[in-house]
Image (cartoon, rainbow, N blue to C red):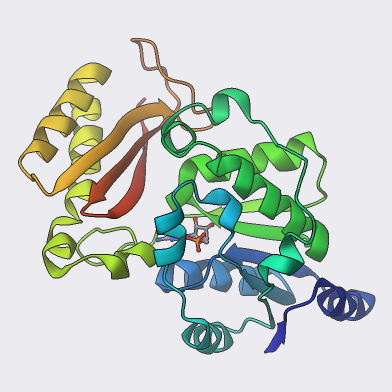
Length: 283
Ligand code: AMP
């Protein structure tokens, strides 16, 4: 596997491969890779001749400086896993490379970012969209892969690509979970052993809420049941629990139509903030 830190050498490599008629897939990550990331790599390897994984902890998407400082990093292990997964190239740029000048552009996603992650982490999606736009321009892939774990992010990236006509297909990949249901996340390794035992309760809560929706389609009641369930666990501090239309992130007003919904949750366990979601289709 080739490892690049400068966009120039990465671009030269991609041009050479493209000139041989090869297709290119991109998997943007912040490293500290786990099986969820590797699932994205696997999907990319399946459908593209060249898989590029970017590893970059993007400072502009962190609204909390401590979260940025404490974000796990393990580049040697990442590279080992990527090689084993059949990835051809890794792009590991520095802050100086990604932000050689202070950006003036600010991407605004209106209603898509005024709720859930966007509301609770002001500026987060402006940072995400900026770095994804930079990475798409630097690599010009045919396809780029994003996890459904970050559902709101996936919808925002699709909007970015549509609004700015990036010539790329965005592929969403289902959430990879631990055997006890906890969605895999780089942040899981920061959980204490007690917090790790409690963490699957977020998944259990999502299951309870979706089950409630199937039984009664009463949105408020389903959310109330979910919140009541979590109250049993004082170590879990809920940030939000919301039901939205899966494709537009609109809040539903009383009636549920026959369309996919997304139940989204974010909560703190100690200092670690976890997110998860579950899709549901009610006929
Ligand atoms: P991150 O390194 O956390 O920025 O994640 C990089 C990509 O991997 C994003 O598109 C995430 O949505 C995706 N991802 C992270 N965890 C999972 C998971 N458990 N299942 C599926 N995709 C994931």
